[in-house]
Length: 262
Ligand SMILES: NC(=O)c1ccc[n+]([C@@H]2O[C@H](COP(=O)([O-])OP(=O)(O)OC[C@H]3O[C@@H](n4cnc5c(N)ncnc54)[C@H](OP(=O)(O)O)[C@@H]3O)[C@@H](O)[C@H]2O)c1
Image (cartoon, rainbow, N blue to C red; front, side):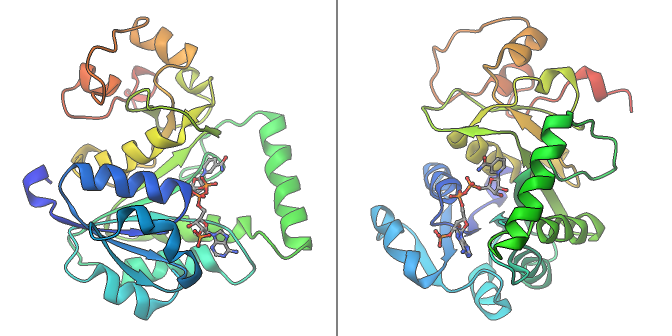
């Protein structure tokens, strides 16, 4: 989809850290922005007052989502495993059910989500996810299995989706568009660190990148050592806001040779 056809976007989970960065990137692109967040979190969006509209409510409420995505060309959804109320799968399902059939749908999650089972995780990573899943369920605070279910439903849908799988995150100024690969375990992803602002940048860029339709890119910061090694070393930062990926394929995100042959 060309940038000119992306006019109105909905950001589901707009009040969170990733959501607020996405609001910022979307407004910078001149998009009309509708945000969805829990009623009590609306004040977190005060900085954007007058520049976006907000539909308050739980993101897994189909009626809230139906109203919010109406007329939207794209929907950016933060999938979170909080609570034991099928929040992530309910949110994903509501978006799948109510977004326009031709809308670009971009969902966020972590590396632990696998689309085809070909991701290769370290023992530490797998152990960490298992412990978080068990402890989270025990204290009824986190439902990692439900985020897995949410992504399973997205993968099975015929929609124009992208599931962006984030590495470990850190705060800090933008370093540029993250690089991506189809499988966790690919050498380029070894750094396992992305600035949250750049995760958001990737999500918003994906709205107009048709090469990412029905892809589940695992992303990593473009300045991590392995990413730099794969892209041929440090590059100048003369154009703030321009992306590392853009230097390889103008206007497009950058994927790596390691998985191109598939
Ligand atoms: N954190 C990481 O290290 C990490 C790593 C890889 C990928 N990711 C992915 O990145 C995305 C953003 O994650 P984040 O950790 O950076 O968090 P975040 O952007 O701060 O977003 C958290 C979201 O969860 C909502 N939320 C918090 N508590 C909730 C509850 N009890 N019930 C319902 N909603 C609740 C927040 O809404 P309110 O504003 O209403 O509280 C907000 O929309 C997620 O898709 C996550 O899977 C995160």
